[in-house]
Length: 156
Image (cartoon, rainbow, N blue to C red; front, side, top):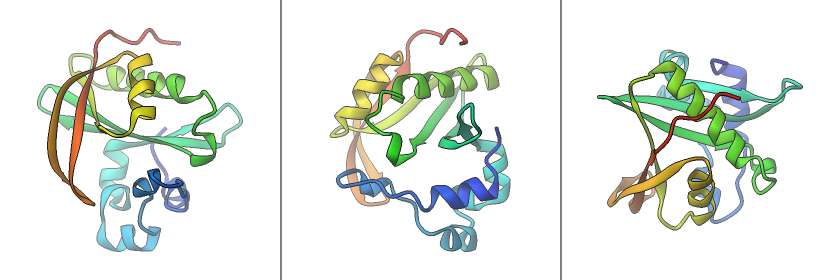
């Protein structure tokens, strides 16, 4: 579902433990003021989605960033759910939605090379490392893998 302002505000309160704390978002006030990422209402509507469970609870979010012939995924699972076995189905649902939105696009994502927990999850969900490079991030230069979805996700 499209990400609501309330869900965006909630995501800004999530706190990941180190070393994943670099994935914490700035305050909602700061994001709204600067109109960055999902703090920009138009961008939030076009690119971001809330992932909710069967009871209506917010469990995560996805970004579907359009590139030429590629949909690049960004995603985040609620910190309290990390390490509970939800990662693979969570990533598969997001990949399935990306395919629905842009059926002819390649689906990829970027992941920091040290984040082995995420890399294993993405591999189990059907992604494969295709490139490794250094680029600037919000926290300075960092090394990333680009991972591409190798097989279409079968809808659940």
